[in-house]
Length: 111
Length: 113
Image (cartoon, rainbow over all chains, first blue to last red; front, top):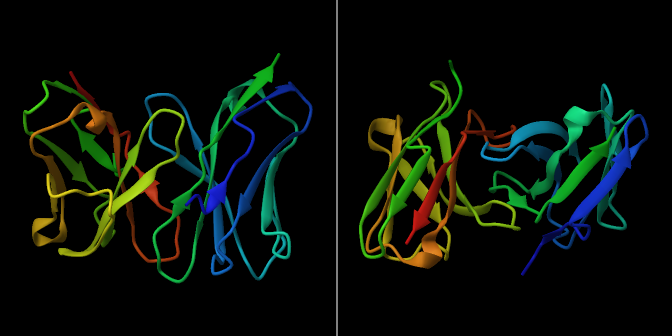
């Protein structure tokens, strides 16, 4: 039962353009959402999070949008840079429960 | 370095052998998690500790798997009688509270031949 879904396994974006990564969830109990970035042979590193009481959170080039009615969140990266090439995981939790991760989207930034 | 440390980084073993991995969390973090990641998948929860107490175990954690966190400091994850399906990256993460972001280690890549 995949409660967090990332339906795009890969995405290629030109350097300088906007990258938009999408994530859907099915568990309406989820109230805290995070994005992690992962390089090969390394552990995931935290990027940005959002609580369900908000619909947007920004941190520099990264913005996360949450649409609770659609059970959908997205990560926007503007402008995209070559160092952003990595696998991005969406994760969700509720209460003090563990994080549930999506399957990831491999982002490639084309110079 | 005050990050999460995992040892070894890589482990190659033969089917049927036992392996043990170690995780040293960030020192002030009282929660420690183990996740497993296979190719093309996201990290999957295995188990977690609040200090030395193991509070939850996933159904993924068969009876061949055991984890400990003596004295609420470092943790070990042991896999007995390894199978080829155990090949994966085993990730450890720690956090000081329940709703903050997890800090992950670099993982232990296990290959069972």
